Image 1 (cartoon, rainbow, N blue to C red):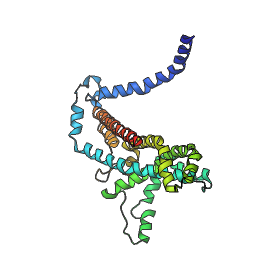
Image 2 (spheres, rainbow, N blue to C red):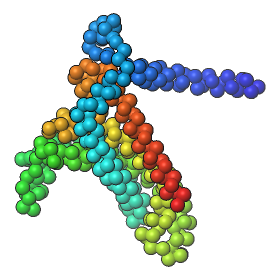
Image 3 (cartoon, rainbow, N blue to C red):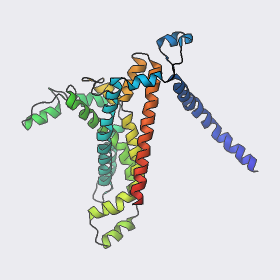
Length: 294
């Protein structure tokens, strides 16, 4: 009987496992092997030109100034974009969960709409908003007596502009997750806190945030991973400029692989990024566990 159940389980799981192996495990393993080779356009033409180079790709990357600049740019997007995105998501979720909120379905749909909107369409709107001469943002600043800013052409402002666009584009997804978590918190906890004399602020700190801790950790990990893999926004908005200030690690990997056709080097970039993301995630998990222990 147990063997039949086990066999039935494998029959149901088998197709999914095969699909995962074919479309995930095999490509990742192939890319890992490729990162130790000089796979380029000549190897594409004739596999006989492929050579094993060991750690040369990794060493060359660590000696490439543009890689370090891309890593620094990515770090900026992570350190600025993740807190802003989480704060916006939590704030929107709290407002939608408020008893005073009206037309929740309408606002929930409106705030989630940017997530499912095509990035090209979003880029057109934001490029118009941030246009140095005709943009609505500079028009508003002019009403305050502030000189127009070249948001996408000035190295000082291009990164904040891309970070702000990324937050606006993606915070709605996290908002839905946190809203579900807020709705799952028992009302009895708030009633007990209110009876004890806790203010709304103390209820937020002592009831809401501790109850949301697991979801905040998950949202933090997902948002961090998304910002480490930021590519489409700078590709569509600035093409890595100005002065390579918006080149991210993933954008650098794209250029290595599909502009210069150095696919071995591009694979090495991918696995270096994976190691960095994995280390960052471990830090997040440990910090979260320590805060829960306290």
